[in-house]
Image (tube, rainbow, N blue to C red):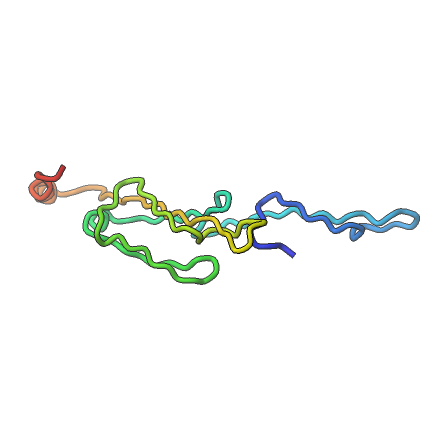
Amino acid sequence: MVKPGWRKGHKVTFEGMGDERPGCLPADAIFTVSEKKHSTFKRVGDDLVLKAKVPLVSALTGWSFSFRLLSGKKLNCSFEDEIICPGHEKVIKGEGMPIIGRLGARGDLRVKLEIVFPEQLTEEQCTGLAEILKDCT
């Protein structure tokens, strides 16, 4: 049985459960844990990493989004009273992978935010933005 938190490469040995031949001791059956790629999360040690794309206007004016963890639990991340800067990462303690040998302990969930900039702006949009942002530091 695969236990929660086992990492890629972990070996599980079932002694004497492998091939059998007359006159020989039964061989061991050895299984190596592999990880399936997940569409939403990436495992980094005991942590889980979630990448989220944030539209530029939302990064400046406030943003929230919801998602489900591997367990099915729903989480909401809110950035209503802050400006999201490029490279911003929010860490949610204890929502990562189970930690082997530490009952109930889990790694962290790291939400990495990527700001999505517009590919082009009209001259009118550029003028409007420059006016709005002229006093920002």
